[in-house]
Length: 295
Image 1 (tube, rainbow, N blue to C red):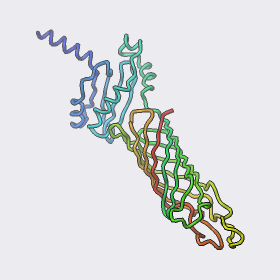
Image 2: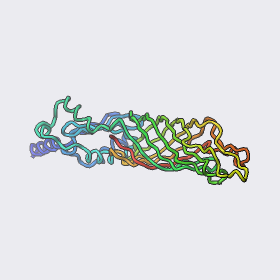
Image 3: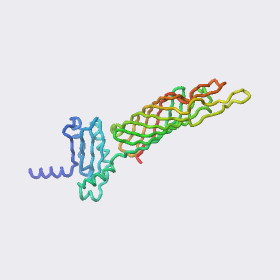
Image 4: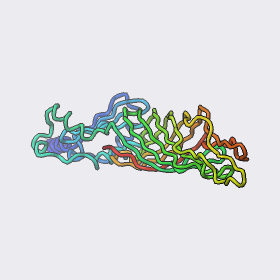
């Protein structure tokens, strides 16, 4: 009877995914581990948890040696993360069927397939508006390098055309802007989504200027134009969501705020009541939604 129970226990251990939990792990994390559903060797070869501020680092290794790592902040994120990794785990190759513990060099090579891509491309659309009742449709793009949890990248934003909602200046003098900049941010996993936030700076340039008004020579209207620099510096912050966090194509939402640190272009006409009206906001809020993907 004892030998039968022992043999059953050994067979069960051989068929189970190996769990490695660091001794210094907090009790809440240990409780989350015990709440996980049973994991077999078909699910993974090894699952380990190690302390890593601000929470733990989860390492998930499949039978063929492929591996993935996730930074978790709260114990309730453990079960969803393990479930997601079970779904995206690579199918075992013919070699792994006969050799459940492949050579470490093969492990390192295969593990790269499940590692997050360091490069992400983004494309979105929305609106940007601010003081002086100016509002413009917005199209934006980005290329970001991820160094978990930090992100560095370049941005491109096209404010198609600013509309004066108070209609103080004729619409033929409302330009758009093209802004090129850089960002520094962080990506914090939160269950099946990620919270992204950071700061950015950009140099914007007016994309159109009008040199004449719609007035005629009979009414004495002088030629109107824009005065001041066609360039402006912008500095701001952003916060957004990326979901689902474990996919190569994600939905991205974002809210932003920025201020202009340089003089803006204004309307100019000797006989125009709207002379001196800014054509771009000195501060602005923006909202956008789009996609980000790993090439």
